[in-house]
Length: 226
Image 1 (cartoon, one colour):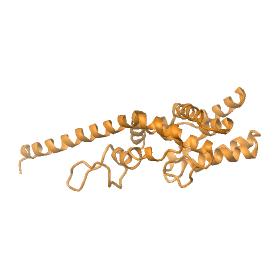
Image 2: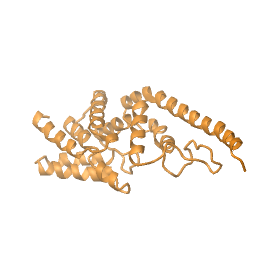
Image 3: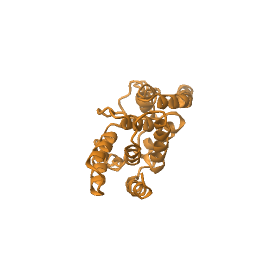
Image 4: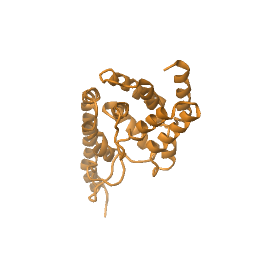
């Protein structure tokens, strides 16, 4: 890829990224992780991979404004239109579009090409380990969702059966389980090396908030007169 082509795509990405949990540095980490993974795969089209990595989250602003929208679908179409407008081939634009459509963990579209699989894995790597925890907490704060929910008895829920969104719910639904969904050997290996940091953080914070409720609620009752 020529420098001027990279700068054109990068500039469009920077114009689109507004969410601090999915900012340009997230995009660069995904791109760098993707290139590390690509070194271990064969027949990778680097122009498609680099372009898809740079543009994979350009639909985030629309989803942030309306959570019912799917940023992968919106971003895929935005990327396609941008590439066609700037005289990239329809074949390349369509391949990039399919990579972006299939990168979402919650999506129904599964990655098919090697570039799409690498993008998926590189993006999921940035949801793994300590970085994944930090980004999730930032995002939950942005959208006004709590750290945890309470059970009917007023005690802290661990998130396993929660329907209401929270950090604990997101951890049990996605962050804990994403390690089983990697498509490349290198991506799975890199994510596995990060896993324990996330497990330790979740267990520690769950223990700490549960202790506060378990000890504190009984002491409060002693101080309140009927």
